Image 1 (cartoon, rainbow, N blue to C red):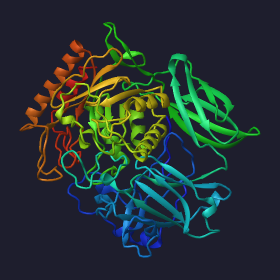
Image 2 (image 1 turned 90 degrees about the vertical axis):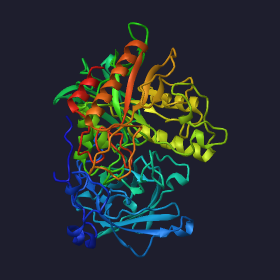
Image 3 (image 1 turned 180 degrees about the vertical axis):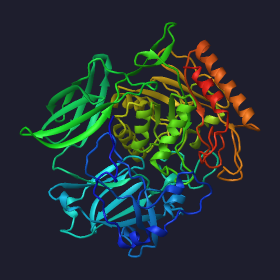
Image 4 (image 1 turned 90 degrees about the horizontal axis):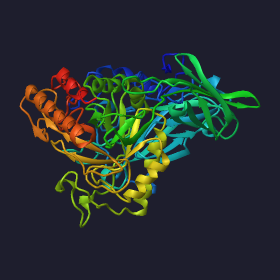
Length: 613
C-alpha cells in the first residue's frame, strides 16, 4: 500500500503571517447551529495536514492551510479587482467563509468579492526548483497574486489548479500570496450542485472561496505533470500515460512490496505495464498496487512520483436470463448504496478532518453498502482515496447548474412526471453556459480519472441544466470509455449511455425496459426521522415521516425487500437510497447531520442490504 506522508514526517514547514501565528492560540470556530465530534479537534496549526494528492506523491511539499487574513469588498467589475488595503479578520483555510469552522460564518453575495492574504517563506533547500502553488478547489472564480503581481486565474468550483510562481518570488524573506474570489452561486449559470443563496428544502448553504487544501511543491523544470491510469486486468496490464514535456518514463508496479511488473517508454506515449495474474479490485477485496514513476533524461532520473492503482473492469451485459446488468470484473453485481451529498454542519463542503471523511465511508460499509452515489458534488482526492482503500464503488455526479427543465417556458417539472416515463425535455443553454459546463465536466473526469472506486459518471440529475443530452453522454463515453455513463439520473431519458435511471419516493420503482441499457433506481426512500438535539434547525422535513427508530427500521427493511423483488422479477441492477445523512433542514438521513446517531437498527439495516449481494 502507498504510505502517504504528512506534515509531521519531515516535510518543510512554512512561516505564516506573524500576526496570524501569534493569534492562533486564541482562534475559535464560530457558533454554528450544529457541530460534529471532529470539530473540537480542529486547530489552525494542524488542519487537513495530510498529503492532498494521494495518486501523485512527492516527498517535498508544504501545507498552506491555516489562518489567512480576509476581507470582503463591494463590486465585481474590473475596477473592483484591486486587493483591499484593510484586512478585517482571520479565516481558517480551507473552510468556506459561510462555515462555522472558518471562524467567520458570514455570507458573501454575488455583488461582493472575498479576498485572502498570507505570507510564507521558501525553504532554502528548495533552491533550484520550480515552485508550484496548488489549490484543491476554490468556488468559483479565483484570481491569484504573488508579491503584488498576477500569478493566474481559474474558473471552476470543484476542480484543482496549479500555478508556477517561481518567477514572481522575491530573492528572500517573506513572500505574499493574495487570492480574490467571486462566487455568484445560483444567480448565474455555473455548476453549483445544491448551493443556493436562500437555502430551503433540498437546497443548502453555499460554499464560497477556498474549500480544499492549498499547498506548495518544489518540482524540477519540465517534470511530471500528471498520469493517466487505465487498468486492463483481462489482459494482465496497466495502461499508463505520463504527461511531461519530454524524456523517458520508467514505471514499476508492486504488490505488497514485491515487484509485479515494469515498463519503459517515452513521456506522453502509452506505456503497457505488465501485471500478470492480477488481483482484481472489488468492494469485498479492495486490493491496491503501488506504482513508482520516474522521469529520465539522458538516462538520469530528474523527477519521481508515487501512486497506486486497482485492477478492475466495469461493464454492462446480459446475465444468464438475457437481462442487461451492471458488471464488475465481468460478473453481474447489484450496486446498493446511499445518496451521499457530502455536506457537513460545521464545514459545509469541507469535512472537519480526514478522519471524518474516512468515517463516512466506513459507516456506509458497516451499513452493508457496496456503492455510493456522490450527489452533485465533487470531493477532494482524499475522499476517493478512502473509497479506493476501503472498497466502495462510486457513481460520480456532475454538479448541476443553470436552469432546470421546469424553470424554462414550456418546460415540464420533473416532480410533475411519473417516475420512469421517458421525456425528451431539455433546456437550451447559451454558448457561454454550455462552455462553462463542458469545461468543468471534463475537468471532473480528468481530475478523478485514476480512482478505481469510480465506476459511473452521471452528467445530469433530474433535468437540472440538462441539455444536448445525447451529445454530452457520448462525449463523456469518448473521454472515458473505461467507465459507465448514467444517461440522466431521473426522468429525462434519451437513447444514450449505459443505464436508464428512475427516481421514486418513497418507492421503490423501475425505469422502462430498454434493450441496450441496465435499469437502475437512482433515488428512492427518503424516510424522515427527526432526532432532538441533533438537528440543524427546529423545522425539518422528510419525504415520508416515521415516528421512531423502530418504524424507520421496519420501513427501511420493507423498501429493500421490494428492491430485491424488483431485482429478481424485473431486472433491476442498482438501488440508491436517499440518503446517508441529514442535511440542514432535510431529515431523510440514515445518520443525523452531525454523524452522532445512526437512526435505525444498524445490524438489521445492514442485513437487508447485504441480502441483495
